[in-house]
Amino acid sequence: MRYDTPSLIRWNARAYDSSFGYVSAQGAPLVDLLDPQPGERVLDLGCGTGVLTAEIASRGARVLGIDGSHSMIETAIAQFPGLDFTVGDGHDFTVAEPYDAVFSNAALHWLSRDPDAVIECVRMALQPGGRFVGELGGAGNCAALIAAMLTAWREHGLRDPHLPWYFPSPAEYAVRLERAGFTLRLVENFDRPTPLDDCPNGAADWVRMFAPSLLEGVPVGTMESLLRRVNELAAPALRRESGWMADYVRLRFAAVRQ
Ligand code: BEZ
Image 1 (cartoon, rainbow, N blue to C red):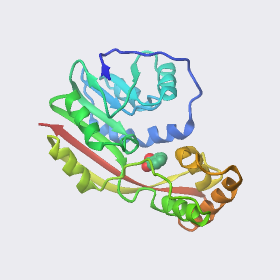
Image 2: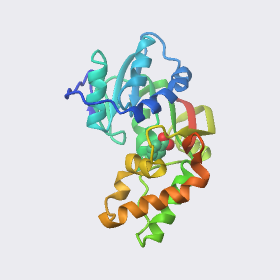
Image 3: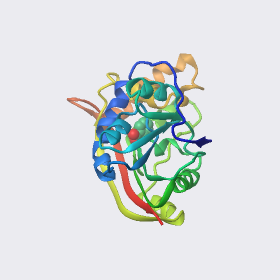
């Protein structure tokens, strides 16, 4: 897929999903790390509803937001009609003019099919010296959530679900970046316990919201019991008096194309 800025695709607006708003709010420090400069060209890979794309644009950069989800891009265009957004696959995109920076928040872990292909697309989208600044789920991300899911699935006689995410260790991701021709400037790995404000029914709601593909093969009659069990198993690690927390681990990096 090729993006010739502005390759703008327009759809009708749809309601903004506040759970993704939280993702965007958490991404503000990453924009500071990117430090976009007036006039720079910045590509936001996995831009979601475009909140951080707009933040980058507000600092004077010229932006293009790309996301695999049509509905996210519809919402981004509706919210920020002056900016360029397009639907596309992070595994397979090219640009007409190289960018000064590629930015990515909370999206790279969804691009799990071939992380090297994603990194190569990013490299090709950057000019030499261009920056790649990103944050994704790191190794151990959602460990308690995933353990609860796997146990509940097994207890219900279901096959282990395919987990659609890529949560690399800092060392693994650094090797991929260096092998692809990037110089690492910064790698950080840290816990970010995250309130599940939009999940009143805790881990069960999280599974419904973020892992719907796992539920596709589950018999209707098993669903309620399965998700109740996920909650029971996850509660000791993730339920606080104040509410449910997700056990997120962040891998943050900044790299430069050689
Ligand atoms: C994350 O941000 O780490 C994440 C969100 C949803 C599903 C999996 C991971």
